[in-house]
Image (cartoon, rainbow, N blue to C red; front, side, top):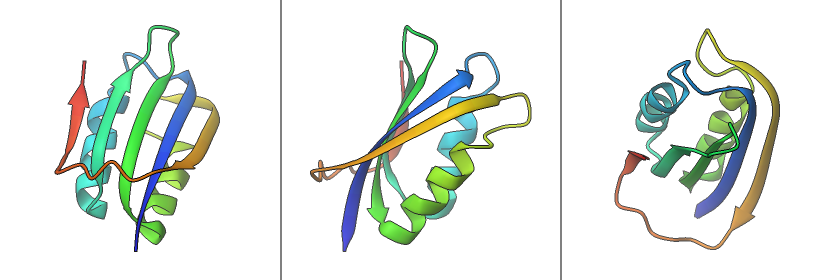
Amino acid sequence: MLHHYNITVKGKVHGVSYRFATLRKAHKLGLTGYVKNLHNGDVFIEAEGKEENINKLIEWCYIGPPAAEVTEVQAEEKELAHFRNFEIKK
């Protein structure tokens, strides 16, 4: 069964390749959706896939790439959007 989560990552997450690292992680986990930077300095992710793999992504979000300094991760389950792939949005 597929699940959809909206994930917001707070902290030092811009300028540290967070979006590109998320893209790689999502591909490894077989997830679809997107990641983008928000104007307030957060990173926003919409991810769909098996619940086990989304949970792995959420756990990874607390760490992120080496230069990131994550202070908070918020995750909320939402309705499926049926994404075809995972991409970086501007």
